[in-house]
Image 1 (tube, rainbow, N blue to C red):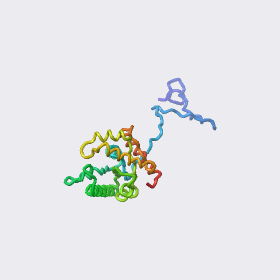
Image 2: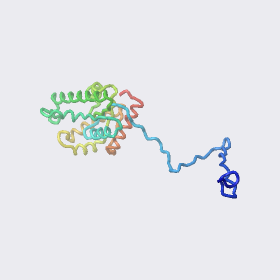
Image 3: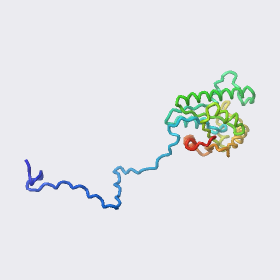
Image 4: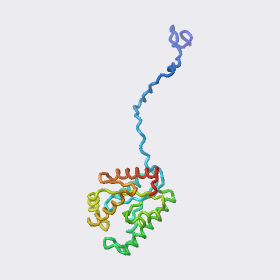
Length: 236
């Protein structure tokens, strides 16, 4: 039953007036934004890093720099399939007749090293051909470019992205002392290798001093360096 005058209001009272459309703001006047009820505050976009790119990385550094640990962490933290290929692990596939360089670097240990490098390169190419990124780690010396960086590029491909991990000598000595087995070197050998690695300064390769960084922080620095390399290839 209809009540009131011309509407559905209470008996004896006129109905409420229909809602009026909002008055548009005057031309030229700024309109203040309405704050969101959630209190959301927009933040700057995070650095994209390497994202979903398929890439091959060579992590260079002396013994004790943390190459293997950082490479494994970076591979595990990527949002896309990524493999870690450790040269030392592949060398130690030789169970009988392993030529330990600590017993003296000779033609036998050199041959096993070259074989392990070619095996790593073959594995890397297979991963890349199947859309899986890979990171390799090796103590590549700047004073042997043909055998070192040049050799890795021949085995893996010209798109290989090298990054140098070079903490201070004190840090390297401390980390090497925590090693065991044939991966632990003498302090003299570590210092000699570290000194040769300093030749990478001025080479144009990105160098990360992870003396004050933990594994996660170093992996983030590595990803940022690789992202810059992808955005502006330096022709290493």
